[in-house]
Amino acid sequence: LKMLQLQPEKDIVVEFLRNEEYKYVRALGAVYLRMVGKPVDVYNYLEPLLNDYRKLRHITGANTASHIERDTKKPERMAWAGFDVRYMDDFIDQLLTEAEAVDIAMPALPKRIALEDTGVLKERVS
Image (cartoon, rainbow, N blue to C red; front, side):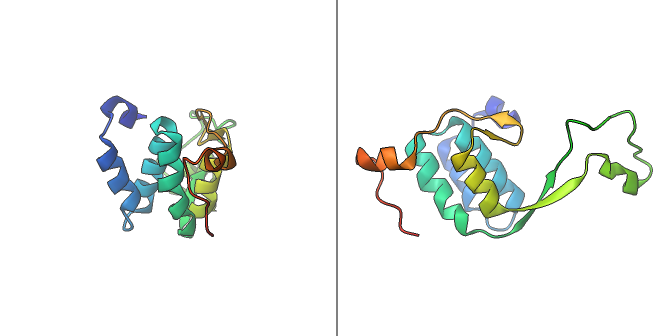
C-alpha cells in the first residue's frame, strides 16, 4: 500500500511488470496496476503474465493468526500464519476475475467481453 502513497508513473509500473528476474516485484506491480489502472491497461498488461508459471509463496491463515503467539527466536514457529504455494498465472487470474485479492477489495473491472464488444480491446488469442 506504500505504492499508493508514492503514486509511481505508469512507465515505472510497467517496468515492474516486465521484470522477469524478481517475481514478487512483478506481482506487486500487477496488484498496483489492478488497483489504480484503467481497465484497458489492466487487461493489456496483465494478460501476458498468464504465461508466467513461477511459484509464489502466499501467506494463509492471517485471519486466525495471533501476533502474540509467534516466537521470532525459533524460525519453525514463525510459520504461525502458514504459507501456501501459488503460481503466478493463478494469481493474475485472480486479479482479473475476482473482486478481492490479497485481502484487498479491488475496484470493479468490466468484463473483457464487454470491452471487446465496444471495440476498446481486441479479441484475446490464447
